[in-house]
Image (tube, rainbow, N blue to C red):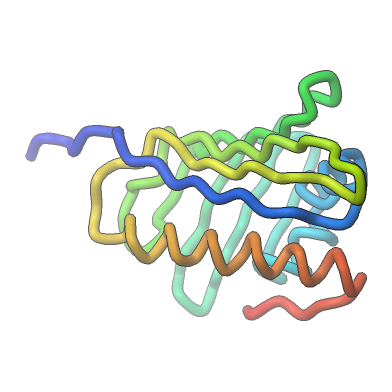
Amino acid sequence: MKEKIKNKEIRHSFFIDGSPAAIADALMQAEHIQRWWTKEARVQDVKGVLERRGYGWEVELEMAHDSFTRTVVWQCRKSNMQNTNAWEGSTITFSLTPQTAGTRVDFSQTGCRESPCYEVCAQGWEFFVGRSQAVHRNRKGNSLS
């Protein structure tokens, strides 16, 4: 079977009342990711694992923060999200731009394979990045898993 082309991308922009450094920390540390994505997040060094055991999903990432360019990049190495490998090889980027009262976050996931999970994942990211705003603003929050 021929592999589907990696040409899909997901984009969202949003605002968080916080500094780029604080937001980058929240994107690189398991205890923060657990508050807005999944309680089953683990991060060690630059390796991250995001799980949803109830669904049997696991995503393995290589994570990097470049403070000079104010970007956080997650390279997806392994994934069965939505029971497909559509995320494998994709790049998830959070570009952090300081604003007067906080930070604009430009989110993208590029290099996704064409698959039935594309629309669900696009909506899911919109939900989770929105949730990250609320968690950061309230300094509390509960994961959905």
